[in-house]
Each structure stands twice: as C-alpha cells, then as structure tokens.
Image: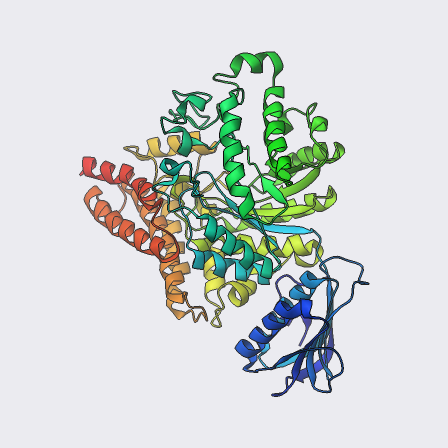
Length: 625
C-alpha cells in the first residue's frame, strides 16, 4: 500500500507508512494519561466498537500490560491542536499537545478504522493546523431552520474533519422573548436548544460562536410596524439587481437602533460560552441613501464606523470579542486603522478566478497592514445553484486558504448561504465543507485533494463509489451553460424569473448576473443529457448512513429541477414536446417533493416562504396555457 491509496480528510502534513499491518486484539485497554481525557477516551471507545467490533475498557495510567490504545498529553509538542499518531506491532499511541489535538488524532484513527476495520496499516503521523480557527457558518435564517438532529449529525461529521467552529447565521431565528412577532412563523431556536447545542459542540472541541446581524439584512424585523420607524429607508429602495425592495437596513443614527440591538445581545449572548460574537453588518444596501444621507454626504464612511464601534462597545460590555463582516469598511481604507486592535474583520467573497484573487489580496493587505485580526471566508457555492458549483467552490476555498496564510489570518470560515428560498439540499454543500476543511487544516498537503474518493469515504460513506462522483459532477453542470463566475447558476435562477420568451429570460439573467449565458437549444440539450448521465447510477450507491434514501431523493430532486429549468428554456424556443400545461403539472409534483424533502431535515418555519418562490413560474405556466 502507498500513501496515495490511503484516504484521509484532511491529509496530514507528515505521514510515513512503516510497512505491514497491526491487527487489533479482542481484549485490550484504552489508557488515558489523566481524567481530563475521558471524553476523548469515550470517543475512541465508540469508534473501536463501531468500526472494529471491539469493546475495550478505559483506564488511567501507563502501568498496564494490555494497553492497545494509549492516549497521552504532552504539552511539549510545539503546535497547539497538534498530535502524533503511531501504529506499530506494540499497539496504537496518540500523543496530543492538548485535548483538542488528542481529539484530532482520534478522528484520524477513526478514518483508518472506517477503511480497514480491525487490521490497520502501521504508520506514523505528525500533524497540526494552518489556521487556529476553522469554521462553518450555516444560514439558518433564509429560509431553513434545521432540526437539532440535523445540526448535531452535521457537527459530528464536521468535527471529525477537524472543523472547530460553528456559527448559525441569525436574522430572526432566535426566540427572543420580547420580540415574538418577528419569529412567530420561523420555528426559531430557543435558549434551551442553544445551551444544549453549545454543550454538544464543546465536547467535540467545536466553538459555537453567537451571531446576530445588526445593521443590514433586517427585513424580517422592519416589515413589522413596531420596528419600521428604525429603518434607514422605510418606504423601501431600489437594489443593485433591479426592482423595488422593502427596507432591510437600520438607521445607524437612530438611538433606537442601538437600543434594539443592545436588547438582543443581552438575551442572546449569555446562552453561549464562546468568547467571540459576530455582529454581522454586511450588505446594508440602503446605508447613506435614506435618513442618514445628509450625514453620509458630510462625513462619509465615518457614519458607518461610529455605528460599528457602538456595536463593539455592546459586545465588549459582555466580555466578548467582536467579529464583523468587512465588506463596508474596505471601501474606506483611511478608516481601517481606526478599528480597535482586538476586533476581528471577516473578509468574504465567493468566486474563484484571477479577479477574485486580486480583490482578496487588496482587502487582506489593507486589514493586515492596520494590525487588525483577520478571518478569511469563502463559500460552498451551493446557494442559487440547486446542485452546487463544484469547481468554483474548490477554487474559491483554495485561493482563500492561500491568501489567508499569506496575510496571517487567524480564522477560516466556510459559509453556506440560503439565498432565494434555500432550495438546495444540505448534502450539496458537502463538497465545499470537505475541501474547505482540508485546506484550512493543511493547505500544502490538501490543495490538490482528490475529492471524489474523499466524498465517497467520509461524506457519503458509499462503498460503491457512486455518490462522490455524482455529487462532484452534478455540481459542475453550471459550466455547460455558464457563466462560471457569478453568484449562482442560470438554471436555478431562471426558475425565479418570469419572462415570456427566451430572449427576455436571458436578458433578465444577464442583468442579474452580469454575463450572458449560452442558452442555445444544443447547449440546453447537452446539459439535459449530461444530467441524465450523471444521475443514472444513483440507485447503485450503497451508503452506510441512516439517511441514505433521503440523500438519493435530494440529489434526484436537484437533478429534476435543473432538467425542468432547461426544458422550460427550450419551450421558450419552441424546441421539444413540453407545453406550459405539461411543465405546470411537473412543477407542481416537484414542489410537493421539495416540501417532503425539506421536512426530513428542517423545521416547518420558512417552508411556506421558500415554496412561494415557485408561484411566479407556476402562474406564468397557467397564463401561457
């Protein structure tokens, strides 16, 4: 066996196969160096039982003759979160710099047991991370609010890939006791649920960071009469993508805005043990265009900075460190040095390519030169896509890891958004999660990671090798029609616009995405054939997961929606046999399946809003029939 035949996620930075294999004995001990490692010992005990059918007891100390697995702390190791794993004829030994490092060594052992069972290769591994914080941010506000089981199962898997931070992006999905009208239809997280989730994360060396957007993206609040007076533009505004939008942004000059946010922080923050807090602040579309316009004309971005500093003071009063999205401050380079030196700027961008790389360089250099701590935040490219954008997600995650290392970023946060109804199912995001987890742990060892077998082994647990390839290739359908670099893919987006002919559809998409896609009949027919070819072997998958049938349904649904979109565009060109009536009947069936799949992983809150986005083209079909 060679190292290339051994699949690990992430690939360790130092690994040596020493030859031969070690067969785990039926009777042996798990020895831990001190009681502090009980949870790690229990984790090891659990994986030995699950993958090797062994039931080894746990004891403390090195004085036993029958130690099969030794778990020892050694604070002398040079790197935080580091571990050494040795498998020899004498047994298995994991040495951790700290309990987190020990946990990661056990996670690597778990992946070996998963592949080889009770007879594992002899080797030595020495490993530690590039980025101290390696996180995933889940959008739980637009529109999916996952069940606790969904979250815990996902966090368990992410922790095994050495992710150590989770953020739940919140706008209105915490059950604030003083604001019931805002979350009444959202199936929000309760304080008790957050406490349970926080404890669940801590056991797995995952930091659950509280998150509450505090300036823009407040439309779920501002639509209520009680909060509308706090809006920057109470009558709405014209967004960059066209049309008219209801208000989304708080007026930064109104003392009531800070009073509202202070009350939210007072209730939310105490439910978390994390020393950090993310105040958001991204995309305040109306800022400086409504009530604050006169002050913006006088003082420019300082109006924004002063509001951010008020949020910073609120967070500091709770003894926490502020994180914030940096998309506004980077437009005011002269103000960046005025940021507090203990604030954390989150730079974000979701495209690959040379232009994206240059913009990352500009922003990160500006923040690093000011001495401000930095997180680098790529995305899974799942949103506005139905099936993902595989190559873009990988390129986006790769260049951000490269730039983050260059500029000394302390964190790497993989974002997974739910724009426009959160139509994509959760497993579509596995590719971005897995690749981002790998390069944030060790860039050099993982930048050229072979994703298909990794997805088969550790995301889908598919011994037939079907689902990894299927997920990877379905996520690249966007490249057939293009464009490659825009925040979504055309087949998903054209299901949410209602033109009456192909030219209107393409004009609308170009206005939204900036680049015209290739929607010629031969291109759409090529996409349809490719989707059919990719999805065909799905029933041959043999996933060792409890949700294996649901995963098949979710990928089939994504494929069916993509195909529906392509055939709809062909109908506009009078190609094929579809009519508005046949497409309407099919879409009604697809909407019913979308609802059924949704309820398997998520709460009912937000479902009606998400499904309502299908109404536009259902009505279009009815009018055309």
